[in-house]
Every structure is written in structure tokens, then in C-alpha cells.
Amino acid sequence: MRVLALDIGGSFIKYAYCTEGGELVSPSYRPTDAVSRERILDSITEVMREACDFSAVAVSCAGVIDSNTGAVVQQSGALPLTDGFELASWITSIVGVPAFVENDVNCAMLGELWKGAARGCQNAAMLTLGTSIGGAIVINGELYKGSHFGAGEFGHVTLHPDGKDCCCGRKGCFGAYGSATALLESVGDICPGILTCEDTEALMNASPELKKRICDWAHEVALGVSGVIHSVDPEIMILGGGIMEKRSLFELIKTALSPCLMDAYRDTKLLAADTGNAAGMLGAAYIALKAISGGFGR
Image (cartoon, rainbow, N blue to C red; front, side, top):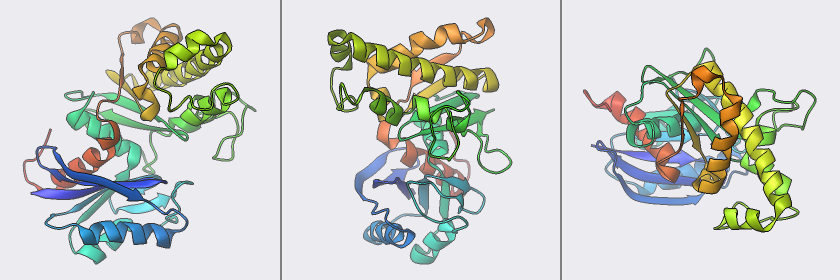
């Protein structure tokens, strides 16, 4: 048995077949064309109609998602699917198999729980540092989704009242200070290629001003991470997003975090995500396989 797993982002749709053993087969991607809901749906349709021999469709998607129905409760600014759109039902109407839809960071968390850094863990939390900051929580081995399917929106916790404008329309949110976008905005006049350079540590050693700004950003991330740890008390705290592939940045955050934590929380493990770009597809596939395959589990 295998499912067709899609990770729908604002720029690309990543997709692959996923087996019950968690192997991703024939991974690929194509532009999302996120100009409108119709253009996004056209892109999804093209992916599905080119696929064959799958028992379900599993979708990782930005926004607040009602995972019981697969409907979009609140769309993401980067992915205009419109509030209330029943994405899972629409997919089933196209391909005739069950469809399962979940928030992208929740899927990334499940991907890490199934095949990555949180494997075997019962209580964990995750932040993804990208355009903004997304979050997810696992309690007793299960996703905690909250009363409105929106648990884990740590990126919109206020760090600095009356601070920087946030994409949500409020001010001072964690995401405005600790995201990858925030880092790029901070150092763009010195090093506009900071997110793509291969040796960040060498750049910092060559420029004290660049190092100071990056360390300031790492401190903001650490403040947000400490809030999550103090609130959720996880065994493992995972940081994801492409920027966390830069080990030097991860280590700066780890160093900045220690003085932000109360003594009782200092043994919480801070880890970088393990499954990379595959996390969303793996997590979505896990949900689908668990639903359609008796006895399936971690």
C-alpha cells in the first residue's frame, strides 16, 4: 500500500509516493502558481492526474486546517485557498480515493516523530523558522491541535509590545524577530546572501558587525524557544526550516538559549530537524496510512 503525499507551499508543491515503511518513492516538485485558489488547484490537479496506483492522498498545507474534515479554517497569506474551502472533499472528487489534510508544521512534526529527530518521543515541540515561524506540539505521542485546530502558533506570541509589524497585522510578534525573513532583513545590507552562503561561520569571523546582528537574532529565537519550553515542557524541542541546516546558526541559538531557561528545564534537548524537505510529506503520509491501514503505527 502507498499514498500520494503532497506538501503544498507558497512557492512549490513537493510530492512523492510514500510506502508503509516511510520510504518516499519518485519525489519531485513543481511550482505552486499561488496567484489564486483556482491556479493552486490546477497545479494540484496536474500532480494527481499524472500519478497512479495510490490508495489515498495525503496533504501537508499551510494555514489553519480542520484535520477532521480536511477543510481550510483560515488560509495562509502565502497560499490563498480561501477560508472554509473543503480541500479534502475536493481532492476525493477528482481522484476518487480518501484524502487527508493537515497543517504543514503539524505534518513536519509528525514526520520527525515517525522518521526523524523525535522518533520514540512522547512529548515534543517544534518550531519552523521560515518566512514566519510555525509551531507544533506532541503530547503523549499525539498531536495537540487545540480547540480551533490552531495550537502551536508560537510565531504570533508577542515578544516586544509595540515592536515590529507582523504579517498578522499585530506588532512585536516572535515571527517578526526570529524568522529567517527577520534575519535576512537584519543583515541584508551587509550580507544579502546569508541564507544561501555555504560557510556562515567564516563570514561572521570576517565581520564583527555581521556576527553581532546574527547573535542578536539568535537571542530573539532563544527567547521564543524558551517560552515554548516553559509552556509545554517537552522532552525534545526541534528547530526546523532550511536555515537550520546551517549548523553554526543552530549552535548560536543553543548557546543563547541556556541562560533563558529556568534550572528545571535545562535538560530539554534542543535538536535540529532531521528529515529536511521530506518532513511534511512524511507526516501527511503517516496520517493517511494510520487512518486507512489497520495496525499501522510508529
